[in-house]
Image (cartoon, rainbow, N blue to C red; front, side, top):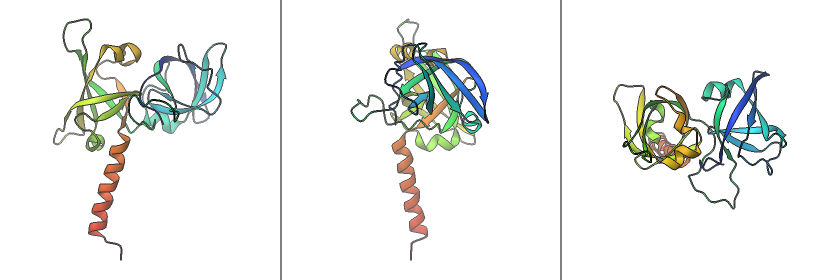
Length: 216
């Protein structure tokens, strides 16, 4: 489990073919690897991955990513900056919200602009998300974008479209501490819906199923 509070910005420095996928080398930068051991889980742009090698001298760790994971995520098959977060410990503060590190879908940046001309202004982010995820989005609800826990300010459900649009306000601090500041219109991002919303949807659908097909 994770919180969606990005610990540091790392950098994918090498992508090498490995089996049916790739082995990624990640420069941890300010991400502390002292307490990381082989087999630990680290969220990379919101996707939970397993550490397979650690180089403490050069502050580099490696992960293996399958072809299936590559096809279901964005930004993990090329070099570049990524958001990093260690798995949650029981005694840690839950600063964001409960996050599983399982990407539910890929969204695309529709709009990204400052709210005002002030240098310290927040930014207005609009993401086109798959219509299959629309039922999990709610005003003031949570969503994970490339590993960062964010609050939804508005949801646009457009009839007849294959996507919906979620509006998010991003404060300057979040832009400084994540890779979100580098997003451009058209970029792909990893999305994870709120874990609680998934369980609520399942319970409601099960109730409907039982009401129409009662167990004898």
